[in-house]
Length: 214
Image (cartoon, rainbow, N blue to C red; front, side, top):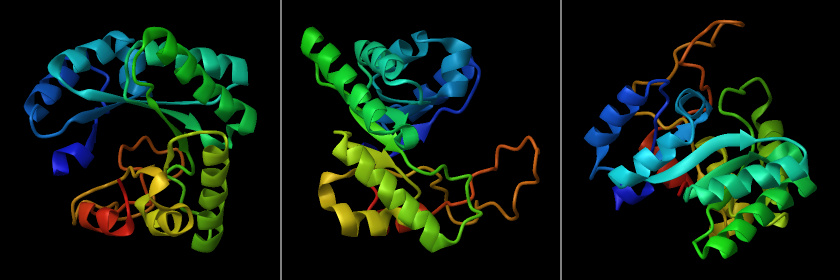
């Protein structure tokens, strides 16, 4: 079902706004994404509030630190019963393995289902490289994430078909920057500009599904 595959990003800095939007989404989607802006503004409480409404939570904090710190962070995230969490795939094998170790250690202790660990490949705001070079970088980071034990990756839908061909269905593939037709950015964002419309490698929902997004 569509509502099982959609993840709605709650990119707000107000608890009131996030709760208002979440209540309107109840029954339409199952998973919401909490990123660094909302988490920093509201703290871990926001995870519990979303779960109490009935949502699964993707905690998108993109952990990127020394392995021991990332392991502790992922153990803490597992205690909050999130369904997915993100780490930067470029953090290296030791860091990625520490993230996986952290969620599984804590989940065994709590006797809960471990959250999926997703490696963030190349941010959707990056669009200055040749497409072939960028695709190769995404594939290399995906391979590193899977070899370290991650469940999948976060990557633009523009690279989704290449990832599916290379890694098949064992890869859980989350694609951000999904927008209805007509809502794509019209021009590059000026350097230093404070803009919300800064995702460049975007796709429509139809295209994302056709390319292999989960």
